[in-house]
Length: 588
Image (cartoon, rainbow, N blue to C red; front, side):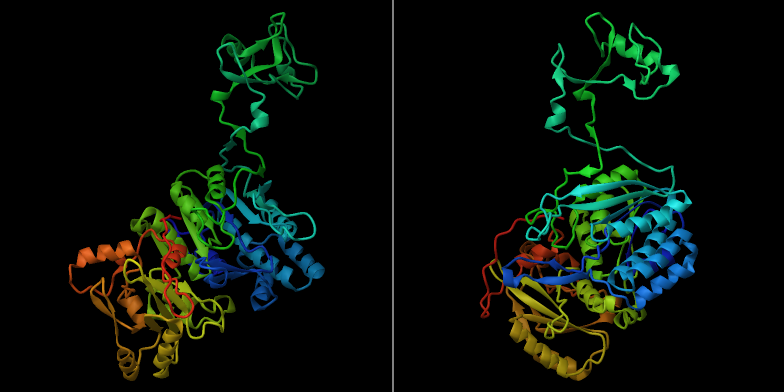
């Protein structure tokens, strides 16, 4: 991947990014939590006003079909595009084609095969790879990993079982699934691994007892279960059995004896199981492959962002600490809501994140900003995000069903500095592509609606937007257009009048037309106060002076997307504004 001290966040298909930007042997650790082929649609939950009012946006669909992209991936495997496949991975996919047929499961597996092979390529010889999955397809994924990693000196190290505290499928007939699987592979026999420890449980603590000074200790065996002739000597009247050997040299045994760390028999000879291990000198119990001490993120957790399949930071902290060191490069090609990037940032690792949806990119940026402040964004190189009109046009007209709403997401989230909620329901938005809420005064909030047009804008769009505003009981409306608006459109938008913000002491256009060119070339951003504390700051700063158009400072640096909506206008049915709930701030 790119060199340098800055972190990298890529917006796009991870296969394309890896092939275009992925430098050979440049990554120390890669963790991925890809879709599981669960045949489910996952939504990001923004607020929880009521069961019927929960604002959601489709984050990703974990249902796979055999389409042109799957067929393309299949051909890349057979042709060994980029030279990343092994003979074993090619033959495995050929065999699975016969066994499974070209349906959902096989489409999922060929998609994963081309990407995992590229990940192996960018790993350093000392690099490690963790794949997070569940039992849905884990048995097939294990075969793929063996075929890709093992033929060239790589190794399967562990199958880690992460036990969630809240079990899934409680009403399903059969055993309740309460765990995920994490496969751990290395690219070679030489790899980074820092042993991790957990606290002793009640059963282990019962082995400790106080010595004559009250220090807790347990007794460990001084011998190993191997017959090493050089370690089968007699020492101070004791000798290992013929099938065992001393676990330390004569010098070390004598040192322990002088330090009174050896328990003695009644006749004064050392006990073979008599090495004292003091509790206050231990680091805990070496971590096993059964991880039962990390809880999933609960509905009330301060970490919770509302993103589906979000993993706890403790899980990624354990993996990153185990298989990397400070300054190492950590890669996540399915970065989602950014748990890997957030933990890598906190642990002083460099990181690379990739995601195909702008919703995830915006959430990663906002999560880092909320925790580390705006300066952290200066440490990130963004790639794949439209920077000029040519790239904006390319995104708007991209013929890929996987990213059919990405232009709308990018336009709205960029213009609102990632504070809006995207309407992801195809055909059900009734003209509304996104919403946001802003503070009117100490008690009330109001709604802004957004509509995005990538082409064919016309005068009637303004009339339609006025109708959408009335239906949604919105105070403001923003039309974001790729094309330049006509004079009649501007005239009709102006005719909608203005909204007077009493506490800000200024007027806003009820219907505002913003062009993509304005967003890209003039850094146009929404300048409406979206939290009470920001409103107060803005009032103190302006002292009655008209505010400028670009006002990134008006957006709260500590609100999560979920809180922004919960704090926002909770508009009850019938057009009456409900009183906002009292909330405490929390960071990601």
